Amino acid sequence: MGAGLTLRRRAWERAMTAQAAAVDGVAHARVRVAGRPLRAAVTLVVEPEARPAEVVRRVAAGVVADARRCAGVRGLPTDVRVRVANRRERRTR
Image 1 (cartoon, helix red, strand yellow):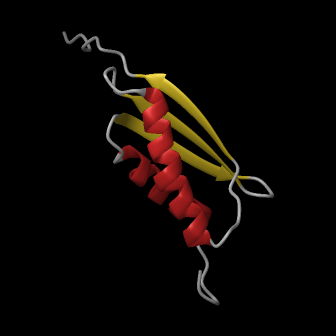
Image 2 (spheres, helix red, strand yellow; image 1 turned 60 degrees about the horizontal axis):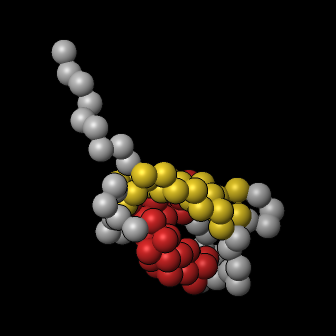
Image 3 (cartoon, rainbow, N blue to C red; image 1 turned 90 degrees about the vertical axis):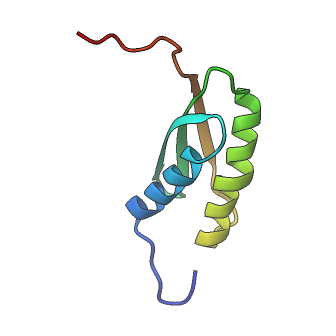
């Protein structure tokens, strides 16, 4: 980042969440950044037909790499949790 610029943690989380949610195969995403040194916690809900390992690779190569580059940090330890979306439709009354 440039001299004198700051990035709020919540804005950083929102940007990473939006980018992760845009990855093919992701139904829902949530990113939290906390701690000293900073750590990212990524929760992904993938589509039933998606390959979770491939989705995680794309998120790591895109979202996490961009976050490191934009923030100017060498490392951003990241924990990724993956769930598969339920195929059943919600019941309505």
